Length: 287
Image 1: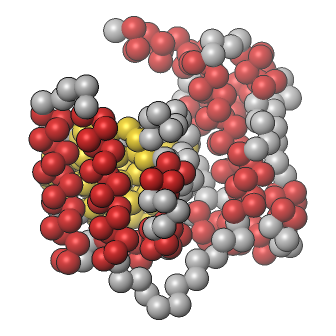
Image 2 (image 1 turned 120 degrees about the horizontal axis):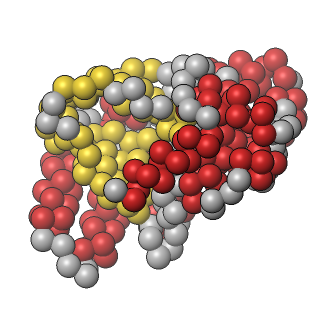
């Protein structure tokens, strides 16, 4: 997993846009060579048809029609394979969701903090299938005939789903997720694009470097060095596309020594030099 490139998607969620909804997938079989994904949004996905294999924190999860999955903020994840899989995917602001629950939702918070194995098992119990089906059906009906109120109605559906989910969750007794790594993530995300050393990240968590290195790799399935570097490369890619920065400006903004150094790393992770990547992606959007 450390050799995979990671894409940090920015869904630009806010109080005015607390979620994004996108039906996705394909009616054919495909091995998906897409890079892994890291983002601050929660992902709530429903496999409507077919089956697929996904990757979360370095673990592979086979999913089939009717399955539901929930990706916590900043978890490296991706899809390895789709077999006629159609997915209804919601990207949700955790901050806005919890605010809409009036700071309740204690079980939702715990669910997001659990390991993916436990989360998948809890979400896909027979008792929760009707709750998932009701959301999928209602969302499909709204998306089939959208109007100016569709986004508002979808948001209320999502909030209602999480309220009902919180009240029905049967969480394992004594579940105490390890939150010691949170400070390292905050340090990366607040570094304004400048490099963060493993030693500084470990110190932010009040851990020794060796212990921190082991905990991070065990938790995320990716080394801290790869996570931190790929975070900056993802930010650089967004700058090239959305801010129309030069390669030199982008390299400086995201903490690389010079344009040549930046270009080498960028090509290794994205398969293209930054200039070609910028031209290709802008060309796709204009088509």
